[in-house]
Image (cartoon, rainbow over all chains, first blue to last red; front, side, top):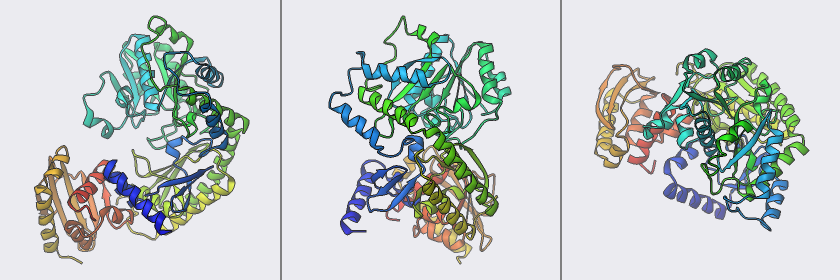
Length: 422
Length: 119
């Protein structure tokens, strides 16, 4: 490492620690992830010191089209010659174009959009719409769910640690186990407005529900006139090999939320997309939910470029193909390291490795970082490693990640503390 | 290898440093946990009771139902309680093992960072 680069890195980490948060730096250092991101390209990122990493964290799925994708960067550069964020109260062509495009690519009869900046804001809007439209109050959500850290969304998170310091939260939220249709049946009342779910839980540990679950939830919602909100913030835009994960089960929600990859890792934008009937709620109060920066003109142009790129380059097929290549490697790891790796949960390039022991996730994170792979255990459960690389990942890069996993497991298998009860 | 007496002495100093640190006490005031420490090389076991951020007691043996179980060597425990090692690094090397929620693992590390920022 050049001494200048080492100095810049040390200063950046020191300032981050002083002015943003010391425990963040301490935790990242311990995990071997005290990286100062510099060059970014495709599925990779380089530390300021020049070390290359395959990024399998990607901000939990914001880089589906790759890091600093040239087409998306060019779209933004071109847009900024003419546009800025725009005045949120006025109508704009980029907003209209992206809303129309979202209506085209989302399943079924989802049609209308409210734009936001981030995923939590999109879920806040979805829950507000559900309460406003149905004039009911109760929201059913699931254990281990993750919908963001804002007000309504935070109330629907299935992890106490994120919520307890801020209680009391918004009342009327009821939690049920994920994947359990009977639990939902028992929880529904005449005052239930909506059920909010991730089709596949991301932060919760890449939990894929039984095949009959989402269709059964849809039927329950129809039978009881309850809105179904599907949070596709991590699963959307090709992550699972379909444009949206709910397509695997042929389920159309009443409201869908998207964010993360819609911005292509370049410009933050989110969207709450809903059926036309629900628009009736906004007819008498069109300005009841506003966002100054939501659906900025620049963000909408980037969003259009992202969708165009995914379609033009057939990233859905590529994600499926690369997913299968990963799966073959995982099967070999399951066979070679049964004492470390218990199970693999996967749809396309949304992948979770279930280790046998809670201490393994953090230790594997460190070993993978040493080998040039960023892959971090989930916040809900450190025994699960979440792998969500860019969809543009190449076969050679998949091999690199698999080699790093294999090398890390080989090294780890010689160490202490691997028993299930440790 | 450290003796039980040496670990107790280190624990006593750790208790004193934690309880006298006003910033730490304020930071951890919503944290009450029963913690078991198991030294696997010597078989020594200890119980620490933390109530609202204050270490109210520690004793030889394991009592009660723990919220957190920390397993390591007697030497590592001594070094950890004297502030001579970074527990996060040892945790990631598998030399210190913690059965606890992620939040509690971070809380334990935060104690070290506040008392011994240089570690």
